[in-house]
Image 1 (cartoon, rainbow, N blue to C red):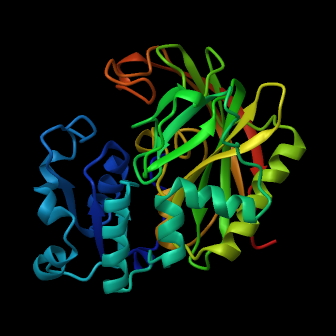
Image 2 (cartoon, rainbow, N blue to C red):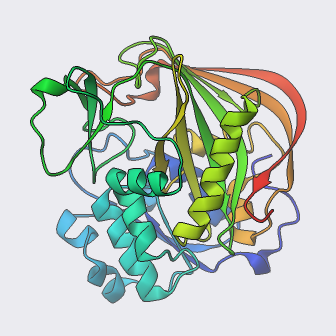
Length: 353
């Protein structure tokens, strides 16, 4: 069931501002339409509509960059005061826009300046994790291969490249890590409630076909949900959220975090995303595998203490990188989805206890 029966409409917001007409928000728009929630959705018009949802184009207002990233445009033109601002663009400019508007409107999704830095900078995420004694990847020695990412840029492999460290020429916006072979990644879909507590709704395993940090034109498998992880690795993940709550202020948000297990090594923090992961729009993390819907819980502030799962989904990216990239995800054309019956009730972790 996509949305649960018996939702108290008095708990739902009246007005929502949506930034980005991306696939991830297809279910969100469907929810707003079903429950008569007033919304407006904006997307930056840069010509390339690779990530723009065809289903949502009818509801999307496209703006040139000089208007889209200008908070004053929304303040002067919006005909309502948003209670929630939902944004799945986690680059520096897009998240800064959300921060400025959330502060201006004092929304329920407002976050502090420490969270803004953490959301938008891989260097800051690395610094905070070290401060919290959460394992991170080092920068490697002169003889190592490294992966170069944009410090303030996109996630999901955009702008990444691999080089030998001795050949690397530093740039101001670079963030580097030792390039590793790894066994698997652990991904969490997480709801942050109105009190700023983190609730891990499920763990997903990601397994690369060639053991590389991001597969390059090789199969890559995800399994939702996945529970068979060593306790010491889950302890690291839960410790991360307990400590993160004390370092940044975030409320009423769906976030996602990834940890990677180095081959013959230990688990490392990989990245924190201030948005849901891909496939959120088709219920892969919630309503297609269990008896819950994360959006309903977000808007009603009624979190799940335990989740009854009825299906396990395995997705395989058969050809997961666009031709013009070394890393990152491409289209859904090469995606294979396998659904199997699965019956288990799992108690969720939260930072309240």
